[in-house]
Structure formats: structure tokens, C-alpha cells
Image 1 (cartoon, rainbow, N blue to C red):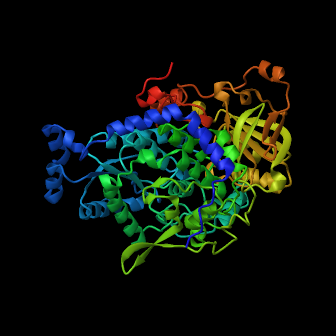
Image 2: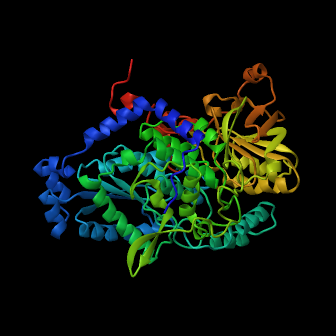
Image 3: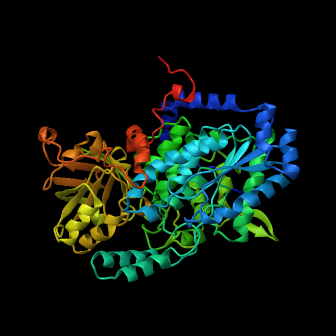
Length: 622
């Protein structure tokens, strides 16, 4: 018999209540619009004959009969498939499996549309990376186009990496009256250990490894179909949305190309058909709630997940009428212990985490400690306790069984009574330079406070040149500005990590301050990232000069430049973000309108406008 439910931790409860209070007007307006959008019977029944005929013109057999007959639910497949990205290549086979399974369950699935999926690993350090964050908004809009045909009663969202999952969710939330399930593809098997890959990268940065040796290491690490195995944004996506109840339990980290992965994909199709019917009707708008958003933040903090989610979760919540802030992250981080050690926070990869008990043990531990809300709606049914169970094949049939209560490897995944750290893996910093995020789960305690002279750059290339010239071989706070969303789309700056690691290993006090991103692969360097207000918006970072003393303090949560405020404000600007005439090439000129419209990082770096009741179709209060 399961023990009585643990009361929710008072800080978790207080944060949830204040999110609900500040979001009351926008959330109620959003839910009212979703309720009004729900159709009685199949959505396509409201179409005129000509519109409906276009909707099934390409169908044959029993699918054509079913769509014409206006009885069976229609299911949209929205996929990020391409065969360039290892994480999305397995999605090629999924639509055929889904169509067969939906048909068996009494529904009809159609491939409604594809969304773009770019790889940050390929574009890293290149001009294409400046489109990466904006691709989330393009994916959201493409999802909206796919679902706009009013043929559908539910949706399956196929995607894995970085901006793709947040974009799919933001787009689907505009159709939040529909049930929706996210369908992942799973990680690749373990290759060259991530720590060894990082070692070779650092040797290459020092000129002590050849390009051929570096390429050999990289290709041994990224070696097959599936998600990269380190705990970056892609795998953070999977864990967070599973804890939010948007995956089938245990679906996140099952390898592609396995019978279990196929069975989970087919079950997602059957499940969304069931959720579209009155008996189990569960719209996406009700799965993503204030409580499930808090659950997502808690799971991110408890595992030291990607800093990108300090923007993505804010943007996803906003699309559901929920106002999530960095202060909420900070307050939750103060009471959520760090329970996972997965690279770059440790030597294990995501497969080791899954083998140790993975999401199921994590959910059980956090529920038993009162750090997650049990009373949520999920795509598996009501109650988060369903996510204590893992999927298995029993005689070829998919079923779920509860996992052991404790981790099978406490070097990778620990219980709440024996954490890796007493609080979460993220810090929010504030001070005279604005606000910033730091991922501290991979930063040794002795490196979490740095006070040193600044060296200012406006590009990764400028930094690299200075490093190779020996100009940074000292205590230094590297400032790289004009990398925010308004400046150039907020690229990730992973190319800095090996050289900064070399400086640290030489015994120097080193930190990074930037209005750009580092993401889930942030490593051992203390990095105050996503500084807001950004330099291009007139933030104080724009006026920092070489030699200014800068303090990066993850213990006290401070980010300061030790220059008098009046003196700093009086300085002329020495550089600026690229103008429209120079922000061209690699398709960047096509994104100029998004660059003009984008909001600040702490509000999700979105382009869809301010969140007001009127934004969701209700009149704003005067």
C-alpha cells in the first residue's frame, strides 16, 4: 500500500500560488478562449462540403470513408523530421506507425505539417547560430499553420531538440482545446565519453591536438541516430516535458530503433484518440497549468538542466496565459536539491541516468519530498504518480511497472536525503550589470566567486584571437556583449569553453559575462549569461570597459561592475550591434522583423507580443 501523499513544500506552494495570482486575468482569458474553441463532435463537421472534400481528397480506403463520415476523431501529426539531424532522423518512420495505430483505435491520423529543425551543433560558432533562437518562433508559427485547417480533434507533436519542443508547444497552445502528446525519438547509444571529448577539445584549443584528432573524437561521441547523450537542452527538453505530463510515462530516454520505442509511438497514437473523446477529454490547455509549469521548473533545477529553459519555460507558460518569472526560478532553486550528475555536471551521460532509474526515480523522490505537485492532469491520466512507472514489453504488449524507490547508481542519481547539492543547479544573479543566469551545477564551489578586471569583446572571433596571442593569460572576466536577442539573435557561445577552460586550468580566476547564451552544455566556467537588459537595448553591459573590476558571485547572487553608476552612465558607447545592412547572409536578412520585435531574455525572448487578457481574445481590464 502506498503511503499517504506528502504535503507540498511551503515554498513550492507559495511560488505556485503567486504565479496563479499574477496570471489570473490572462489565464482565465486563455482558458475561456480554449473552451469556446472546442467543437461538439469531430471538428471537421463544421466545414462546408468543399472545404471538407479538400481535407480528405488525398485519402483512400477506410480513412477516406471515416473522414467523410464525420464520426471518428481526426489526429494531426506535426513533425520536425529531417535526416540531417541525428535526433530527428528516426521520426521518418513514425507517421506510418501512428496512422496504423490511430486507425486501430478508431481515429484517423494525417500528416498535417512539418516544422523546421536546425542543429545548434552544426551551426555552433557560425552565422546560422544567430537564427537558432528565432527558429523557435518559426516552429510555433509552422505548428499553428499545420493545425489551422480545423480538421483535427487531437495532435501528436514529433520533435526532440533545443528550440523544437518549445516551438511545438507554443504553437499547439494556440489550439489548446485539442489534446496533444509530445512524441520523442530517444537518445543515441553511448559513444566516446563526453568528458574525453571535452579533453580533446581543450587540447585542440591549446594547439596540442590536430584537427584530425579532434574530428575523430567528435565523431566517436556523435556517432548514430538519436539525441546527443550529454545533458544539454535537447535532453533537458525531454525530462522537463515528461515531468510536466506531456509524454507517455518513461518515453523520454528509450533508444530509437528498438521495439519499445515503436510500441511507445504507437501507444501515443492510441492515447491521443482516447483523449479526444468525451470520456477522457484532456486538452493541452489543462495539462499545461500553473502546477505543471512549477513541476517543470523543479525537475530542471533538480537535475542541473539547460539554462535555455529559463527562457523556454517562460515562453511556453506565457502561451498558456501563465506568467513565470526568473524570481520564481530563484526561489524554487533555494529549496530544490540537486539530485542528478550528468555531463556536463558529472561524467555520466543520459543513458546512465536512465539506467539508474531516470525520470521515474526522480519523480518518485521529488513527490515523496513534497517538491512536485501530484494533483495535475497528464496525457497518461490524472495524477503525476503515474510517472513513477516505466514502460516495458511483456510478450510483445506494452505495459507499465513501478520502478524501485531508490536509484540503482547514486553516483548518477541520488535521493533527496543524499543530494549532490542542497539547492538547485541554477542561480539568478543581479546587480549593477542587470540580471543574469548561471548554471552552477558543473562549477566547483571554489570557482563560484570571481573578481577580476574585464576584457571586453563583441565577438567570439575577437576573444579567440586574444587568447591565441596570450593576452588573456591572467585573472580575467571575459565580457562578450552585443550577443543578445535584439543584437544578433542571441547565439550560443560554446566555442569559448575550451579556451576558458585552459585559462582556468592554468590557475587563473576566470569568468564569463555575456548577453548571449551558453545553454545546457555550460561547463566548469562560471558564466553569467543572458544578461538583461542586453547591451543592444542600452543595458549597463554596453558601457563596461577593459580593466573595469567585475564581480561574478554565484554565492551571493551578485553581478556587478565596480564603477560609479554616474561615471558608467556618462561613458560613450564604444560599439554597437550589427545594423540591418550588415546583419545579412545565411538567411539572417529574412529574420529582421523578428529581431525588431523580440523581447528580453527574462520574459522568454519571444516575439508574440505582451501577455494581456486581450492577447487571448478577452478585453483588457481598464
